[in-house]
View 1 (tube, rainbow, N blue to C red):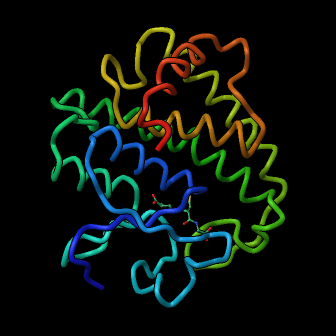
View 2 (cartoon, helix red, strand yellow; view 1 turned 180 degrees about the horizontal axis):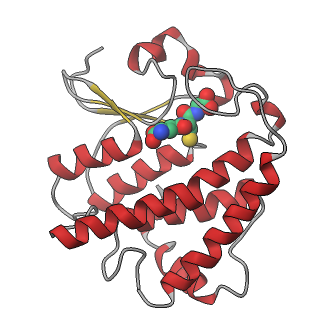
Length: 215
Ligand SMILES: N[C@@H](CCC(=O)N[C@@H](CS)C(=O)NCC(=O)O)C(=O)O
């Protein structure tokens, strides 16, 4: 599968695709986007499987070259190919801190929200994990997922009491994953930032008004 220009396959309702759209908007680069309609299961069509055999979005098809999947790999490619407005750190220390805090946001926040949603939503029966394999829902996981999301809010509130942005002084990909997680939790699990977590709310108010957040 080759294209003449790079193309991002994405879906408006996909929080993982939003992480990449947000990153692209922060960099101010122009990457053509092609929607994949998850609502009608277009990810399983032969045409899309030819792009990504794992039937997931996002996927970045490079001009005349391979298709890159996995949000972190797409970010890595974009950071190297378009170094303006670095989002993955600039020094040995800041690169490590961005990786560390982005991973915590993903493992402790984003993944539990996803787990809670995918094990609860009736339309995702038999699809508790995205990808090429079918997995049954485990309804017992939903309450635990919500506890994990509550702990994520508390832990990141503590972090944001001492720093401006999630990884430190600069806006980074760690903020992107954290913001997408907060909106996903509020919309899909009805779990907004708890009122007592004022540092987290201060950060959210500051970061959510960036024009890139609307991507
Ligand atoms: N680990 C993948 C996860 C991608 C993923 O789970 N994408 C979801 C949308 S947020 C998807 O394609 N879902 C299709 C499905 O549920 O069948 C990444 O980092 O890109």
